[in-house]
Image (cartoon, rainbow, N blue to C red; front, top):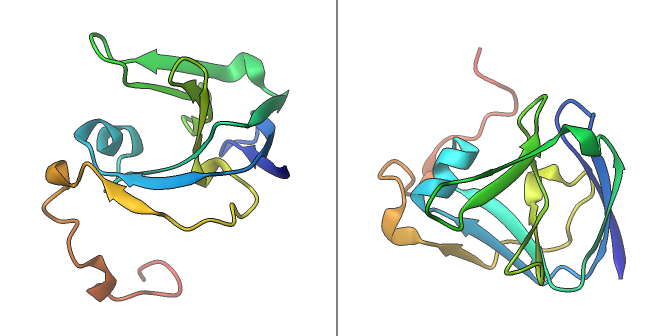
Length: 134
């Protein structure tokens, strides 16, 4: 199994994952768009992962949308998304952006495209700037 390190934006929460990453999806459902504040969430999945919290476990907060299975784990200080167990604990969902290491996978599919934002089309045609806007 490969080792991956990750952390939140403020650095309070740090973790290590020992895993074979099997899946990488970009989810366009309205809930994931709200969670990420963006066009989609980017999540990796592993059914063999071992997650070890290295620091900041006391700063991890969980939220479950009432009446649904939709939940997220995040740093209570900076709000960064963090790994969580799903499917009754049989699968680890890892926000791709939370990893400090490259996952070695590229996204396999866009999912829930029927709820994709109207402005999230043909983005490869949008200019790419080396730095932020001036």
